[in-house]
Image (tube, rainbow over all chains, first blue to last red; front, side, top):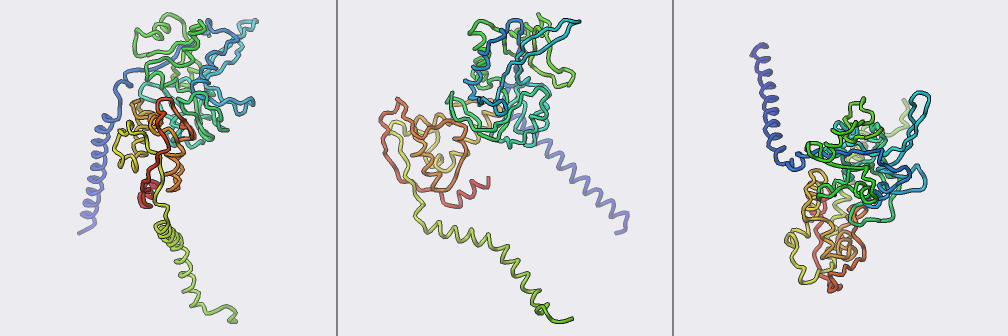
Amino acid sequence: MDRRDFIKVAGGTVLAGTSCTYAFRFLTSSSMSDAGVDSTLAKRKWGMVINLDKCKEDCTACLEACREENNVYHDEDDRWDINWIRKVKIEGKIGSATTEKTMILLCNHCDNPPCAQVCPVQATYKREDGIVIVDHHRCIGCRYCMIACPYNARFFNFKDEEHWINPDRPKRTHGVAESCHLCAHRLDAGKMPACVEACEKIGCGALSVGDFNDPESNVSKLIADNSVKRIREDLGTEPKVYYIGL
Amino acid sequence: MPNNTSDPKSGQVIIPVILIILILLPFGYSLVNRVIAQGSDRSEAFLERPDAKYENCIRDTEYMRYHHWELLRTVRVEVVRYGKRGDIRLDSCMECHPNRERFCNRCHEAVSLTPDCFGCHYYPEIFQPSSIESVTEKTELIPVPDTTVVDSILTK
């Protein structure tokens, strides 16, 4: 066999081998993705609309409801405290006048979540219905998602929660990152998240959660009827939390 | 050169021998441990039996005894990743096996497993729901999985 023949045979073998592996991968991946996807989840796209005009300044009903529902760790020291949903004061300048406003911040459940992109173990991921969730079984506590999140919505469990407020729901142990999951367990069961229920209970109704894919849903109508803003839209994260009156 | 050190040829033999012994040491250690474990009487554990009217588990006893963790793991992935919330939950085990210490822990301790389910999921050590008053401390001697089964659990 001369050199020319050897190169022909070797090149042909390599080409055939690589094309076989790609063909095999293509065939298996297409059959596997059909089995794993739940069609009912994929139809929906959950998101939130917050009406800041209705939100009372000193009210903390949603914050407390979230803590009670999801066993969120509370500490007097701000360094260890975890708030899946929190209130901040923002100052705006219109001409010479300054305006103050309270605002609710939580995980924005981005369509293009930076936290999920950076997670080295795929513990953070976007569910089929658009909710960004942390799989705490898989989280290694590297805190990369906390650095990546532009909304500071991620928190790390520096300590173990000792009190089990709601035994029906799991708590988190020391060493995992966590954030709001839009009460995915309640949405799966056909209920509204704890913060939304608490807000309706006190008669504010500032928070509303619904399906963006459905043009008849409450959130789609709110977005169509009002002027809405999202925070840090310039980053291209496509957040799914809309604010009215920001 | 003065012959202060020993014969260079003996060094050529001793160093590889020491290296081989060091490499084989962990294998020998696990072999000895396994022999000791088989010889000891830690191969059975007393577990609490549920009441007769709760005899029907979601799978048969033999499967649950050795593979309940596989079932729970599969369900976990389905719930967390795909949102398929079915009837199988860690909470539903609690209805028939209300006491974690007398049911889960005794077997886990016998095979020296420390699953971290209970760090986050509520399963009380002593818990008596009102629906099962009749559960008493009826215990049953069940065989603990042998060490090869435990090894396969740990490596998965």
